[in-house]
Image (tube, rainbow, N blue to C red; front, side):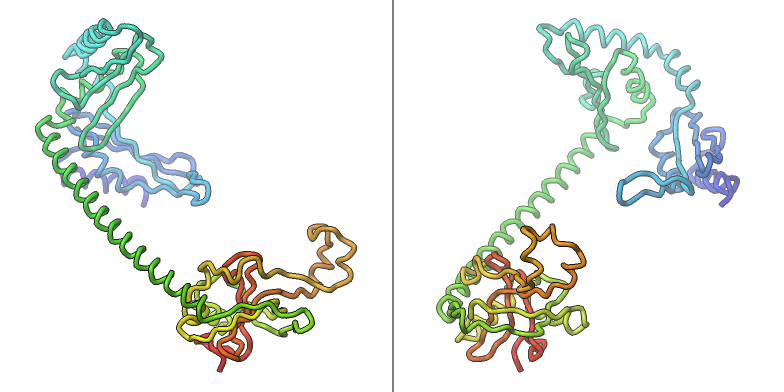
Length: 371
């Protein structure tokens, strides 16, 4: 849209809401590679927030998702403000500066011992408060709470109270009765949210307790119906061409199979240091669908090694040149899992107590069982 078209669109929307161009003037300008929309409220009895709801629908700002900065170009910025001259005239006609000065000075007369005191800008209206201190550099501020939110400003003198009182007298903040009714409704909404959150928290605690009970029972079953035994050194053999999914640390064997079935895997040999033999299918089934749970049978096992003599010349792996690392044949050490006499899959815990890496053999299918 051109600047003229944007201006006409906003003007038409304002007219539809009973606001003419004498009450609010619209200006649309190019600002280098961006567009700026300025709405000046000349009829100061109008609420700024009502005008912003209409004008800001035309705002469009592009953000960098990584660093949260505004990108340059193709942005449309909106600014809504009161006509300065009209507002200043209203303040002078109603002697607002004199009233605020009297309120501010009277508040400071109560200050003793450098304490911070809370005062009302408008007597009897707790929505508009300001704090004072004998040490004016510390703790002085203006605090406004309305249906549109809470705002806090640093207070430097009575001039900072002028805007608050002017907008109050113009009726921009609404009545105290309407605010109390709104606050009551908001409190009820908040309490309802808290009540529902508490119900969900208690339900989650029950679910967690049930899950923990089931988990403990299954761990006990695994300990009872399986045995993890070390393999003598002379009997250890290399298991060739195991399939290692590129997406690791999955909780279920089915997820590994899905990756392998898509072809997203690599082949690498392994050597079993231990055999974990299951005699009960239910216990085995729990393991293969809860691979990331803790198992004492896996604690401290696993790792990676190579017999390549070129590695003997280097004390640490990060000193090994890339051209050597890329050609070294690595072997994973870990645990061969059996159901009865049938090999099912291979686990390399890498020193942890859960199945950190899992490899499948060519005979495994989607159920994770050897055919």
